Image 1 (tube, rainbow, N blue to C red):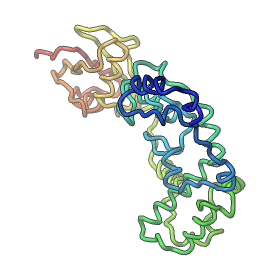
Image 2: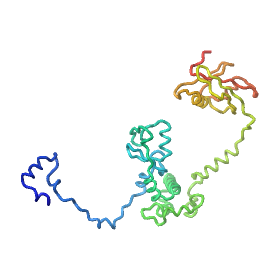
Image 3: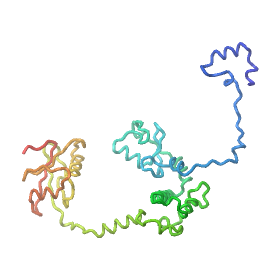
Image 4: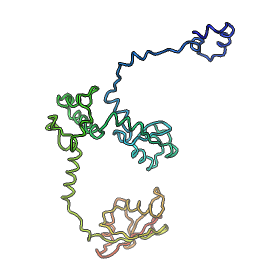
Length: 301
């Protein structure tokens, strides 16, 4: 308390009277505490896997943050595509804390955080595939499997023996055969094989002949006429999707109900029905064009 030695008793008394409640003279006049940095120079701080994943994960998609965007009002970070999608659907609030975000100007890119993530996880794709593999193994009751623990010790340990960036040289994702765990996992859990099987199923399905497309004509009543008003389709479009298309092009509010119907015969289509069902009801021939009417008011037949 070197400063206290230079003050008289009256000055100290005045200083004590001017202090706020709970603050003492010692706290005001004491010398600042000096921290010996040499004690911390040789120490290393580590963050476990779950804590690290929580800090660099997007709360929306739960994956590693890609092209980080920070909200200025609450400083929460998200993927650029995720937060843009939230704003596109009209959610003007932080998905994590629900604090209101006035406009897009409160969204700011954070390249510094992107650089930190790139240093911590050089290969995001491989890191996420490994985490998914561990999660599936735990769900299948293989938490204490020795092969699984070997992979975890190599790549996700606090002191990794092999850097995760070395996995980038592996072609076509992770080759689990090198770790002797291929027989444990079902091949269907891998995204690439799932996509390949879906493609085989899609290719095996019969394709519709383009010449089988039929004509539909859209006519407005009590609302704006859309242009063009002709549809050339197989008839698989639902009335709900057709109504959303009409609302977008006719400047009709999306929350307003729209009715689609035919006059010959008089029939109001349900949202889950299709254009093909309207053609069947009207008993139109393949070469004939079906007239479909739409209105914001329910037709009075």
